[in-house]
Length: 109
Length: 113
Image 1 (tube, rainbow over the protein chains, first blue to last red):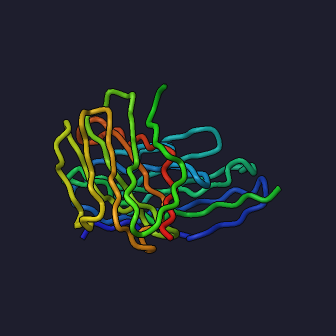
Image 2 (image 1 turned 60 degrees about the horizontal axis):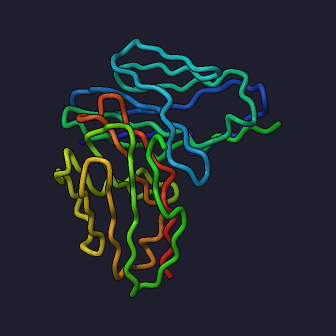
């Protein structure tokens, strides 16, 4: 059964304290893994797509990596404006997206 | 306007009311989706439309009725809802097969009283 698990459920960091969010998945025929950011009261905002193991993508303080079983979203020297819920989803052979429950990230000044 | 626009942003309705949610996309995408988002739960796919044809209905109760008059517009008609239907309803669009992911609207926060 296709499944996505994100951990931790919530993460509190001090400004400047680097850390990583995890997205573990099982899927038949991975077509892509997606990371989104969601601010309160808004829809998810696209961040990255990763297509194959070993691939990495960066955007400002965020870096996403992918293996055959999981993806990490590394946050380097975060700022309070990085506070949000980060969602992970995988697309399998049937083209549908399977979503994780998200990690709520809080960056304290 | 660009992107995906949803109206209204907030909606409070009684269990006997009938209301509709509207979604419009200006991205030239071929597929549109309705999702339900409840606190601390993964996004729940409700309906999928490809080229105006419904291709997915994830066992959604009949009190939710979608309508897709063209590839740019999507509606969700609501009637006789239950309090447990209170949630954030998100519309999204994508190219066929969603290879580049989805673009989401800001959602409608629905409260059923």
